[in-house]
Length: 192
Image (cartoon, rainbow, N blue to C red; front, side):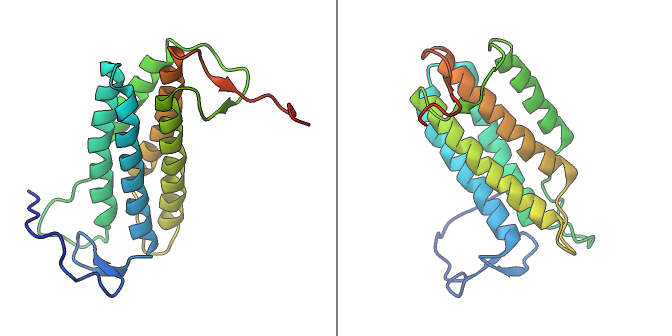
């Protein structure tokens, strides 16, 4: 259970923060950057939901994803060091990845195949979901870099989840544009 009685603690004033294990790291540490960027993704999905509210199914999917992103942040802020902890750390699990895949398929079923790249835009919801997608991709790049560092572990399900999430956000943006006239397509060399 999380209890936040006091918001400021002053413990981060020197540029450090505590991980879930209690270990102190610089706020610029790649692990902290990774879960901070996951948090950014979550915040932009919250903004996107302000424009997707008319589609209750899509909104429910995005609400589940927001909760999952807190799970992912908890996973990333508690490194798997191989040392026993006094508690069972929260980890992303394969069923969360599989749910995303099912929801991608569900949304994609109503879309026409693409014959061009899509420009971020169209409806406000689609534009916001594209922004979430690009921030999610940055989180993924950071997590991959972290996973390649000696002594750092990022689980396969966590990496799969963030990769699948960017796919979901792309398909969701197309789905959001369905009722707004469709995708905004890239025309190569149009303005030469």
